Each structure stands twice: as C-alpha cells, then as structure tokens.
Length: 483
Ligand SMILES: [Zn+2]
Image (cartoon, rainbow, N blue to C red):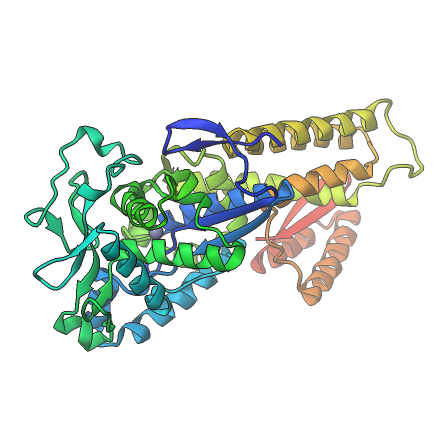
C-alpha cells in the first residue's frame, strides 16, 4: 500500500506509515450536542468514514475516537435557555446524532467519549500544565494556557507571521474567539452562576469550574489512546477546516506541552466547507439543514454519500436540489447495474455468448479495481474512484448487452468498490407482500397487452404507480422498482 495523504501541518502530500505497524490511532473531532448536527458536519464525518474504510480495506487495525462535546459555551447557553439541566438538554441530540450517523451508513467509532465523563483526566492535564509552567491561574479564577511558553504555537495554522498577543491583557475565556487572534486561551473556566444552574461545574484543586472546549479533546484523546495502546501520539487527527484555528492549534499546545513530544498527531487532515444554495433548498430547509431533514424528505442516504464522494474532501462543495437530483439519478444507474449484474448468468453457464464479451467484462473489472485503488491512495481522491466505478458500469452494461456471463472476480470487484464507498441503493422493495402483488399485477398487465387491451394495461401501470412502483419495459421484459 502506498497511501499518500495531505498533511495540513506540512501542507504537503505525505506517504502514510502508521507509528506502529498495522495499527492506526484516529481521532476525529465530533459534534457539539447542543442541537442537531448540520449537514455540513456530516460532510466531514463522511470524509472520515471513507478514510477509516480505506485504511481498513488495506488491512489496518483502526482505533477511532470521536468525542461528543456535551459541555461548552453553546451547550450551557442552550440548556439554560431551555430551562433544563445540561444532561437533560443534550441527551436527545446525542441520540439524534447516532440516528443520523446510522442513516448515513457511517461506521461507528470505537469510542464516543463525552466531555462530562472525562473531567478527571481533564483536571489532571491542567495540573500537569500548571506544574510545567505552561499554564497559569488568572485573577478571574480561570486557568489559562501561556502561549509564550510554547514556541511551536501557530505551526499548524501558520500563525507565526502574525502578531501573537500574549499575557494577562490578551487572553480569552470564551470557547470560540475571533479568528486569527492568538491569545492565551482558557483551559479551565471558573464557575459562573449559570454553570451551577445547569449542572456544569466541578471541583478541582485549582478552583471550581468547568473545562474549556479545546482541553476536552486533548484530555480524551490522550486518555483513550493510552488505555487502548499505551500511546501518547495519534496517527491521524481529523476535523473540518474551521477547526484548524484555534481548536486544533490549542489541542497541539496542550497535548505537546504535557507529553513533551514534538507532535500530537503524525498527520492532520481537514475537510472543506459545504455550502447550501438554491431558493427551493433554502425555502424547504432554511439555513439550518440537518441529516434528518433529508431523511424525512425521503432521500436515499446512498445518494448523499455519492454526492459527497463526487467532490474531493479538500474542495468546497455546494448542496442544492439539482446536485441531489443528479446524485439520485446516478444512484439509480448504479442500482440498476447491480441488479442486472446479480441476475446475469455466472461463468461457465451454458448458452451462446458473443466472442470476447466475457474477457471484456473481466478486463473492465480489473481496470476499475486498479484505478479505484490508485485514486483513493492519492489523498482519498473519491471523485476519481467514483468515475472509475461508473466507467465500469458503462463497460459492464455493454458487455452484458452482448450476453456476457459473469466471472466471480467481476462480482467481487464490483462488490468491493461499492462496499468501500457504501453507495448501493437502499432496498425499499424488501416487503414480500408488495413484491407478490406487483408480480401478480405485472402478469395481468402482460395478459392485457397480449390481447391488445392497452387501456387495461395502462390502468394497471397507473395502479402500480399509485403505490410508487415504476415500470420499465425493455427487450428482456418488464423491470420494476419502488420509488
Ligand atoms: Zn476537537
């Protein structure tokens, strides 16, 4: 395997080699469960899903951690506004996140640590930073990270050319502060009345309070990879581009000041933004589109996966009605081919076959496998992998038109590629009762057509359409699908 990945830290493509052979420690910043996750967050989670699947397809043992931020400025404000405790407020959003993850066929991470359940390691990390002189207690009772004591600060976001304002006059206690304005950031926030009201305050040797958002990821990542593999450096750390600064910069400062290691992660990967355009789209969803909006709209998750994989993760992409319609049409083509390939006779079956059709099909499958793997090895170039898959569909249809029988290696290649992307359509016609009824009506329609009673045949087509069954008459008979 020669997988190359773009490392935000070096701004270069680098050959990926795990720190320990065969094992990959992968940390992916998760959602803040103050509300439903935006579909833009899921773009990042789907990129991470593909990364994970590709690493696993290469035989690597991946240990993936995704945190759930259940205490920060936003969760506290939202819980307070709703008149609930922090725990009561975030619980339904945590459940919703897992439902959306399953809808989008995202492979579950191995651990979903919640910040409020890791307060002890967070306190220990703050104590370590205080002892090393990398942190100090402010006169407001909060504990801050002293970026002047960490010369590597700004390496990931390339802040070095900008003015670093440090010291007591230049520090921030908010979890999210103005971009490109590096200041001492908060590690532990002194408890405020609102924190106490919603149950977001803990006792610590350096004062009652609660963790800062950046601290949460460092503490949970270090705690879990130490327990899993006795390590303190990650192989890959991922997130959206909006997390590069300050979140990931701060994670590096906290973690490396504590471990004394030059890196917190070997490779840093970031997914670009998703934008949402189109009057219809915004009318339907407003500015806040969630995965559940799309699910309730009946969108096949495979179409959404295909849509996202048709753009490289480092490219901005626009989600709109047109792009979703195109992805849905592409998905149908893929699904039709899968059905056709499944129904085609196997290698060695009897009957006539056009000369060369089988060799052509097997050759196309081998070429697809190679192009698909090369594309994903090249910094997870999913659009090229998807293109290779659709080139195979075209070549495959041509060979099947000529009566090609299908060798096992052909089925395996198609199953492997569609499995890595997980983009085959969701089966909606699994209802056996519906299938039997459709077959019965199709037989009746066929009988009507035989006696040239086209009015009756059309009535049956309309009857089927009323239940969402769409017919396609072709040279090999009538096919149907549920829409
Ligand atoms: Zn994080």
